[in-house]
Image (cartoon, rainbow, N blue to C red; front, side, top):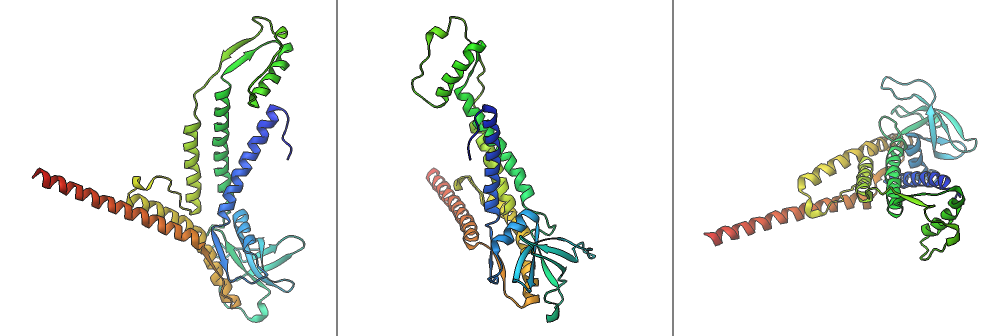
Length: 317
């Protein structure tokens, strides 16, 4: 992608690219948390997670054309007494489109295998993850661009006042300055004494503080997704803090996992399959191992402190 020329275009370009970059980072994490096992070869776990992330729901169904597939879906009909749709319009790329009744949990005869589908929900409210991720991406983008401006201001602390004839020359000189060129040359005949003035516009360097704020926003986004994000050093943590953090993480994680497991249960019951969805084992084990190691270190510190206290009592006695 070709970068723009003017400063205003450059700023807009950086704004857009920064926001999109953070949204893509969060999307990458959100769509990689769960792994699907036992799916028929004609189904795509990547597309399942994409639909749930972007739309909040998708459908599992059997088709005479493609066999078992997973598609996007929208409500097509009424809702039952629990507020869930009774029929879906299942669609995908190309001309793939099927109108199906939602499986109600009762075993259907074999002849009805192509008349029903399984509703898969991202959360029990059928809300997409992307809407929240867009908010986090916006806050991260604002923080990142604030840091960029603060760093720039550290290089530009003065406002230059000059006439229009000399403005272009100065712009060319400061363009070299921005490029970190060690030596900048100018024509002294073009500059008369007193023709240039400067005004101090320096501001406090806030990049470090904003960086801490950005990390807090990032950690909050990970907590929402159910991903461990304790960034403090282990020695600063106590077991209650670890337990509380893990409880919040697990509750958020289960808000996404439970609806997926319910869809697996219904799919297996209707079609006699054995599919399942789990938190990726390496992520789950990391959380457990980390929490365990922090707790053990904390308890060991308590034991060491008690030993030191006992030594002091004995010595003083």
